Image (cartoon, rainbow, N blue to C red; front, side):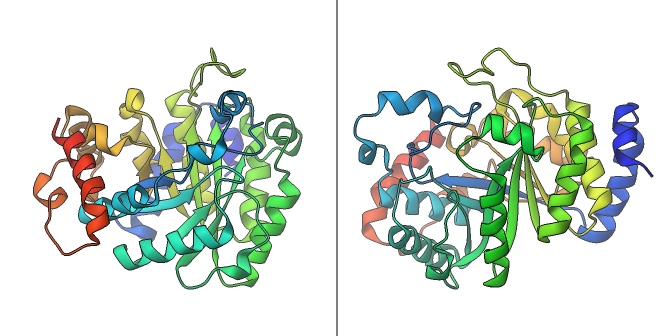
Length: 329
């Protein structure tokens, strides 16, 4: 089966059917809700053409003030634990925290959730500084076509990302990459993605659809078509049956969820948890999973779990209360 030609010939439904069969056989029908926890709203590079941070860098005169309060980060991890959400990874722009600080945060989250965390903190050679608190390392590839990548993400070369992930594998960490669809790639560019996954022994891929940000060159660009997105995910699932696939969609595209699950997604991400919890939007996510014939790990509506009482660090309590109050509103 030529997977790329299937997409080019608009045979996505055929791919989805095959991908769905593979997914149920290899992974079962359980779907996780995943949340990236951001460490900072600053990036030293700030030159990825699609990223809102590229519009923020000239405005931020004191980058240290863009760092999140660590207690706020840990409170968010506690609420993910309560609601059975998975922490997709810790994410921070280049230069936001030191390696020592990131390890300390990771260790505290490990103690809170009982699960080691993934990192998506840019290209780093300090991986030997991390230990059991880290499950894996994520490379923000975004687009696997080398020429397109160099144009869109000039500050983070594919070569450096590849070296980092190779080192991660040597140190015993799992490996992941992120891919954004809608940046100008074509179905033919899947060959680069497939080569990257195979060559590096990637364990997990997170796909996102473009979210056009004001002030970037993509400000007026359309988000990718839903069935194109589904076709890419389905082709990837067929090519790599054991791969974990997480798909991100935005609050204005929740109808993408069903097709993405039937195309092979194991997890869902990119939701504003505290804005959507207990709302019709959160309920819609749960319904999309239900109608795709999947079971959901995690909740978007159970306030009893959200407000669970247990002994925690007293410093976290006001931050937890603040998040819960946002949900209740």
